[in-house]
Each structure stands twice: as C-alpha cells, then as structure tokens.
Amino acid sequence: MPASALLQQLSEERATLADTLVPRIVTVLAGRRRSLSAIRWRPPYLITAAEPLGGVERVAWHSPYGPEAEADAQRAEVVATDLTTDVAVIRTSTDTNAQVEAPPAPALREGLRLAETVAIVGCDPRGTLLRWSTVSVAGGAWRSRRGGRIAQRLEFDGALDARFEGALVADAAGRLAAMQVSGPFGRSLGIPAETVERVLRAVEQHGYLPRPYLGLRLQTLWLDAAAVAHLGRRSARIPVITGVEAHSPAAHAGVELGDLIETIDGQEVDGVDAILRALGDATPGAELVLRLRRGGKAETRTLKVIERPRTAC
Amino acid sequence: MIVAATDPGAREVLRAKVLQMGLPCDEEARSAETLERSLDLLDAADSALVVIEQHEQVTLAPVALGRGVPVLIWPTNGRPRLAGFTRRTTHTPGRMTAREREILGLVAAGTSNKQIARVLRISPNTVKFHLTTLFGKLGVTTRAEAIAAAARSGELSL
Image (tube, rainbow over all chains, first blue to last red; front, side, top):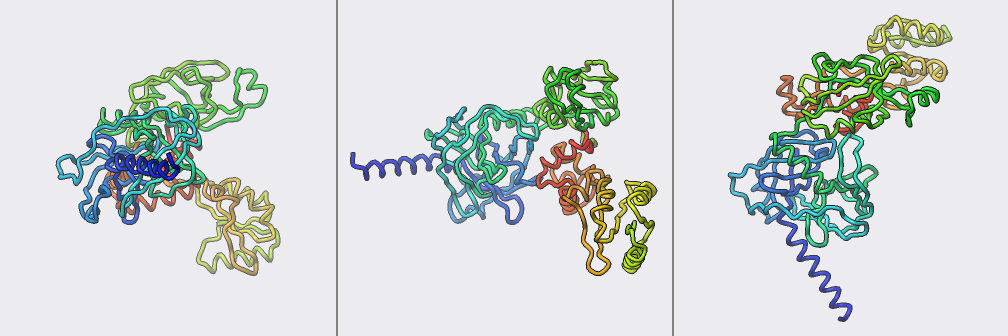
C-alpha cells in the first residue's frame, strides 16, 4: 500500500472515530463567560469537572450542532460536585425536546496503557474541540490530596486549555476511558471512567452526594525519634485531636481532646491529610476503627460515619 | 494598633502618621520584649496591626508575624507597605471570621453558592465575596484546597 493511501486511511479512521464521539459531548455554561466541556454519560446525567464550576447550582448546556445550538441551550441542575475526585454530576431535565437524542450508556474502558493513543473531545459554545494525545502516565490507583480514591493515575501528553475541562477521553476503539481535567503545572489529567461511575452511582442512590463526617478537629504533631521508636511508627507525623464537636460520632465514641490517632482501620495515619483521605471514600453509615494514644495508653474506638450536617463548620 | 520603633523620634513620627490617618494608636513598643507585652495586652484575636519603622523590620516584624498579626512597615520618610513573608503569615487561618467559617462548612457539605446564600439569607454575590477573601487568607485558589487547608489547621471539623 503506498504511503499516501495509508495516511489517507488513518485520517479517515480518525475522522470516523471522532464522529462517533461528538454526540456524547456538550458544552456547559457556568456563569457569563465561562464554558467547559461535559460528557453525556447516561441519561439524564452529564459529567464535568467539579472545580471549574465554582459552586454554581444551575448551568446551561447545549450540544455542538449548528449555529442555533447556543439559542437552544437548556437549563440543568448541578446535583453533586465531588471535590475529592473533581467529578461534577449534572442532571438534565428529560422532558424537554433535546436537539439530539441522548446517546445510551457508553462502553467503558478501564486500565489505559502507557503510550496508547487517545482522543480528547471537548466542546465550547462555538463547536467541537478535539486533540489527539498519548497516555504519558498510566499508574495504579491513587488518592488525591483531597481524599478522593482515583482508580488509576492518568496523564496525557501536552497541556490543554480550560475549554477542555470535563472533556471526554476515548481510546482508539471509541470506548469512554476518562474525563480530562487540568492538574497542577498545566498537566492534563484523566479521571478514570471507573471513578466517575462510582461517584455517579452514589448520586443515583441518594439523589445527591452525602459527605462523610465524624465531628473531629485535628492538627498534625511531629514526634521526636524516641517517641517514634516507642510507638513503633514509621512516620514522625501524627494527627492530634484538637476538638470534638458535641453530639458528633466522635463524641459518642468517647474520643477526647488531645488523643493522638495512630491508625485508622489498621493503617498508620501521618497527619490531617491522611485523615482526609481515609474519610474521603467512607460513606455515611460506614464504621472506622481508630487506634488512639491517650496519656501513653492505647485505646480503640469505633466511629460511625454520618452525613456532614450543614451546620458543621 | 501598635507602633513599634526603638528610636523615640521615629516612634513619635510613626505615631503622628497613624493618628493623622484617623487610626487609633493603642500601644507603643520600643523593643521586641515590649512588643511581646503589647501584643499580649491587645489579645491575638483582636485584629491588631503593628506599624514598624523600616530599619527594624528584621528584629521586630517576626515577633508580630509569628503570632499572625499583620505588620505595616512604614519608613519615617516614605510610603508604608504591608509586610508578610507569604500571604499566609499575614492572614493565618486563625483570622477567619465566624461567617467565613460558616460558609466553608457549607462548602464542605457540598452546598452550592446559591444554596449557601439561601441558608444564610445573604446574596450569592456576598457568598462569592466571602469565599474570595477566605481563599486569600488560606492562600488557596480552589474550594477543595480551602477545605484541606482549613482542616489541616483544625479550623474545619471533619
């Protein structure tokens, strides 16, 4: 096959793949000049990046078709913004006449491999955006600093601008692999489809996303080498309880001011961030076993996670 | 407001400048020790501002900044500037207002700006204003970072 024919074939294959992805992408208008991409995950839900939404409650959205698209923008409600995973769930009203029928639930792709070619498809008010990219980091499961459990560490080649926040990442077979978000230093990160599904299922179950709460205030202490050895710890950092909210799970379990938290569910914790992570995917109703150190003695307390009350601060 | 300078002349000039601006001059400090004492008297929770003569910023400013008290460095001849080695030293999380704390708690509960406005009976723009100030104080740019930063200092319960 001559080289030009190969190139032509590749080009057509790419265009065909893009055609299958475009119906799945819309643009979300959050505020006057802010637009970001969103994925039609499955009716009636759109998925986009939580952080750029900045706490808005209602957004307008439209698909990239035709010049009248913007005029046809529909209102939709942001039902959950999970800052720990950066996943926002938007519920569209199903009764309005959508310009284009919502595509059915997508085929999901788990476990992207290093160097795979991916299509990153987004949308702004003027139309579709597409970038071909390469999986440049494909690691294992990780915890975001905000406590979110993310199924796989994913980064893509090159930096993408804000319009690609919430864009769809598809593998070469057109399967939905991740949502694209901007990371630190302009990195292009992927939130795996699996993680989006986990958040979406929680929202479907409750209608919103309940946040876990224990009623603890904490700070991180630094132990000296002797104390680290005495307590048999790996880390010199240890969270100390600086406040227990009245009538909270922590108060009911008998947690006291000044208690050091050595482990949660048997895992050593090395500071407030570790607590944030441990709490990150604990759903209300779950129980956490805390091993505490009080006045030199070890104590064990079981705390029942509740939904964060609005009055908690 | 505390005026701090070792030189009595410089102290007098600073005092005059502060009063000229219509600000109260509660205390005068002539050394690091007297500054400590003045800060104790004024209570750290009070939003005391320390005005320091320029040549003494190295010796006197850390005393106040270490307690999270903002410092204004004012040369005896020239314009004042706000000191602070980072944004975080002049605005420690301890300086969060009750309203800001309330709003951050609602953000942590997953509440939207509009819902926060409804719960607290204030306008959504006021919510945004409070959040912007709060982000500045915590030295963060996002809602998620604000929650983590406030949790780390024990300002937000988990």
